[in-house]
Image 1 (tube, rainbow, N blue to C red):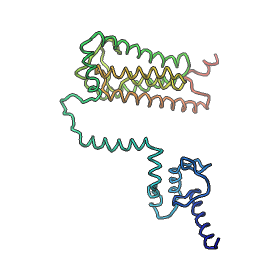
Image 2 (cartoon, rainbow, N blue to C red):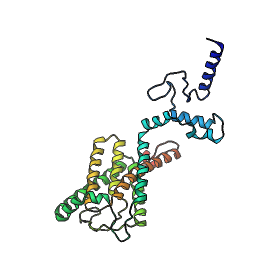
Image 3 (cartoon, rainbow, N blue to C red):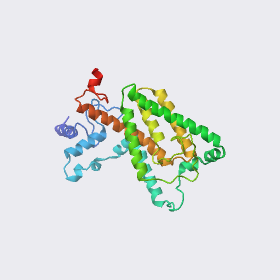
Image 4 (cartoon, helix red, strand yellow):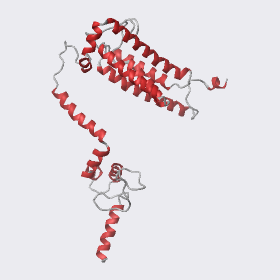
Length: 297
C-alpha cells in the first residue's frame, strides 16, 4: 500500500473515532453493528450519539454545529419512523386535528353540547328511556361495581397495609371536587337518572370528571402492580361497560370519562411519588401510615 493511501486511511479512522467512536459521514467504522444500528458493546442509540455530538460542539460553526437538526440525515429520518413510530403517529394526529380545530364550526352558545359518545349510544339511550326497569337494574349493578372498587381500595390499606391506592383515591376525589365545582357543566337534556345509581338517591353530582372511571383505574393499576392480572382484566371490562352505560344514560360526557382514565393513572403515579418521597425522608425505612411504635407494640 502506498504512503498516500496509508495516510488517507489513518485520516479517515481518526475522523471516525473523534466523535465518540462513531461516524455519520458514510465512512465505515471499526466494530460490528447490530439490528438496531448500534455498535456491539455500545448502549447509546444513534439519536443519543447525535445529541452528544451537538453537546460537544463538534464541527465548529457556532450555533449551527450545536443545533441537533443540523446533523440529521435521511438515515435518521428512517430510523425514527421505524423505531419511534408511536410519536410519529401522534405527530400526524397533531397535524390532522389542527386542521379540524381551525375549520370547525363552533357550537352556538344556546345549543346543546356536541358529544360523539352520545351520538354513538343514541339507540341505547332510547332503549333505556323506554324501559325504566332495565335502567334501574343497570344502575344497581353499576352501584355494586362502585362498591367493589371502594372495598378493594380500602382493603389494600386496612388489611394489606399498602396505602398507595387509598392515597391515590384521596388525591383524585379532592381534585375532582375542586374541578367539578370550578366548572359546573349543564346536565344533558336526555339524562336518565335512577334512585339506585351511585350516588344513591338522585342527589346532585359533579359531571367533570368521572369518579366511577378514575376509581376503577386506580384499583386496576394496583391489581396489576400486585400481579392480580385476571382481576384487573375483569375490572377493566366492567369499566368499559360502565362507561357505555354512563354515555347511554347521559350521566357523563365523553370528556368526563376520558379524563377519568387519565386522572386514575396520574394520581396513582403521584401517590407513588409521595410514598417514595416519604420513604427517603424517613431514611429508607419504608413508607407506612402506621407509626413505628405501633408496629413494635
